[in-house]
Amino acid sequence: MTKYNMDFNYFAMEILKRIDILEEAVKEGLQFKRKGKSYFAKCPFHEDSTPSFSINPQKQVFNCFGCGKKGNAITMLALLKDISKGKIIYRYASYLGLIQNGKINQEQQREMEERAKQREFIQMHQQKFNAVYILLSDMMHSFKRSMSKANNMDEVIMAHELYRVYDVIPYYEHLLDCMLGQYGEVIQVETYLVAERIVKQWHSNLI
Image (cartoon, rainbow, N blue to C red):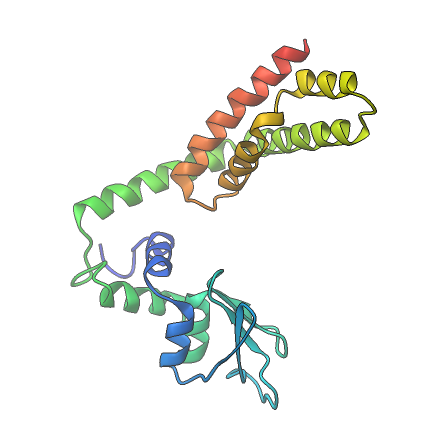
């Protein structure tokens, strides 16, 4: 696979796992001072008399409060080097050993093909996917509202028996995050199938 038909989404995710946005910014000559959880420097993208360029190492993102530019490490490097994100991805994928001589290994090929299948599945079932997400989210919010309005233990028990999510709210919140694609397409599809079963079970309990 050459640089002209490589899966940029796959390599972008892999690159972001391997590099640190603050370290890359320092390599590019930016000088930072720490303020709380963030690091500030004079913005390299506009005339900046006071440091307005911020990096959050925990979230691995940058944001300039002056010019409004923001994004992840790839976006930052593309702006700093004044080249496209595609060239940054290809350059770092080569530097990190993700590709060699414009080619990828069989394991990466299989993983990209699997990711492509999952993306196709999501696109084909997008309407149903969105409906399941909304139902699961509404289910949690409805339960929380009922709990907040409960005046006595009987009403608390009634709300709990109706929605059956009191003990698993953190798990459902995690499912919703997964359905947003925060952990990749494969997990996103697997989570959708789990959430679909949960919603169907909940509806059957109401009937």
